[in-house]
Amino acid sequence: MSLLAAYNLPFVIALGGLAVLAVVQLTGVGDALEGAGEFDSPDGLEVGGFGDALTTLLGLGRVPFLIWLASLLLAFGAIGLIGQAWIANLFGAPLSAGWAMLAAGGAALPLNSLAMRPLGAVMPKDETTAIELDALVRRDAEIQIGTARAGNPARAKVIDIHGQAHFVMVEPHDTAQELNAGDTVLLVRREGQTFYGVHYESPHLGLNS
Image (tube, rainbow, N blue to C red; front, side):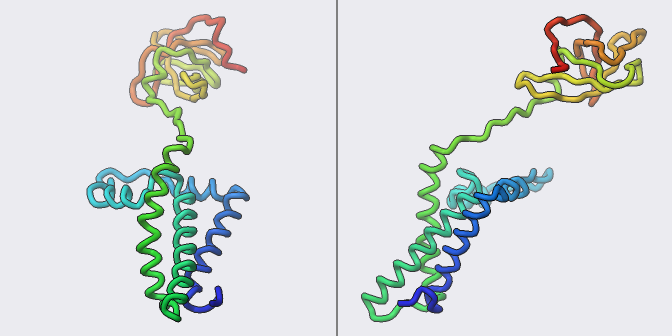
């Protein structure tokens, strides 16, 4: 049997695609592709029902997509080549490329799904530090640019519980007060995208670091 024969070509191409994915991952392009593949479903267009059942059945979502795809290509290519060799030895000739692809695909999909379960269990999970805006209330902030007056907010920096910096627009809680660049304020409430703060001195702020 020749690896480049027509009846083996789909599986050789699959393994070639696996090699390309390996190069993509090693060069760091895979991270960009994973990020580009992430999106938020528009309101009213969330996948559910059959779509959720299908992704669960295929093992999608348990591991990053490129790992899932690499595993599927490996299973498809290996099953196809080994299966064709076994059938050729047993019956004297391999299956045609079309029938071999159907058989290998039918075997590779459930096997790949089964493999994703233990793999997904041992892979480190991404942790998010995303927070709600209301979580910034009662935290210290520092006015960065401009002077904050009633109806005229200024830009301020506030550090969340994860140590991440956020830049928000702040007005003085006391409408008769002004908050100047460099002032430390305590954010006491929020209305929409605007926070309201009161000026005070905090020796522990350290926002300039």
